[in-house]
Length: 199
Image (tube, rainbow, N blue to C red; front, side, top):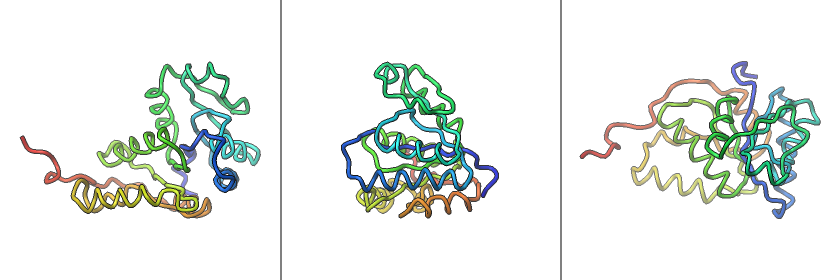
């Protein structure tokens, strides 16, 4: 275990209408996170993969911190089993707090919210504001299309070739945790002058 990493941020779907295979992988991830002695920070919901992963982690010994905007909290979807719960004014404050309190992140399958959170963290790392590990848990090839699009962005010079190092694609929860356990923090220049727009 890398001693610099104590807390993993989870981005994940809050939908309960998705295939059971995603729930199985989310539960397995939660168990693996606890087994590797990490705590979890996430969006605070008891729904979907968010609730599944964090419940499994909590049951196996992890501390869970939920972060949720006031508007969503008023809907009564918060996870009452969180070790700590933080309310924010809005979504931007929520993401900032989750980033602040974690040293690594794993994106499980999810919708537009998960994609938006993941994209922001990739840009943060690309521009040197962060150097934390970013993992896409590619359950049953869920992220194959997105990864192909990332490759197209790089191939057409909208990003540098080494931008592929911004993220790691894990096939299984065990693979995701192995990557985080062995991650080496280092500053890398993922953007070069030739990519910047000249006026």
